Length: 126
Image 1 (cartoon, one colour):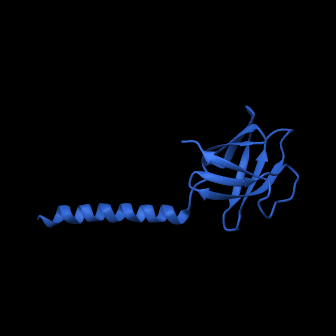
Image 2 (spheres, one colour):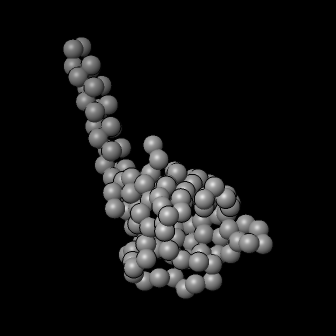
Image 3 (tube, helix red, strand yellow):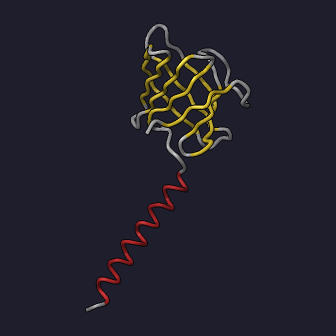
C-alpha cells in the first residue's frame, strides 16, 4: 500500500519531464507580442495562435495573417496585411533565444531575403 503514492508521484514527475522535453523539441513559439525599434521607429508585432497578426508601426496598427515554415534555415515568415495599403511580405526570421527574434526587414513585393543584413531584433513582451 505504501508503494502507491510513490508510483503516483513518479508518474507525475515523468509526465512533467516528458512535456518539458516535447516543448523543447518543438522550439520556441512565435505567438505573442514582440517589440523593437528600427531607425528610431517603434515596432510591435503580435502573432496569435489562429494565424492572424497585428503590426504596430509608430502606433499605426495594421491587421493581417501570417504563416511560417520553420523547416528551412533561416525560418520563413509570410505576412499578408489586410486592406488596400496592405500587401504580402515574405521574409526570414530566427530565434536568438526564447524571447528574442531576429527578423530581416522586407517590404510588400520584395523577394524573400536569403540572409540577415538589415534586420531588426524583437523582444517578447512578458
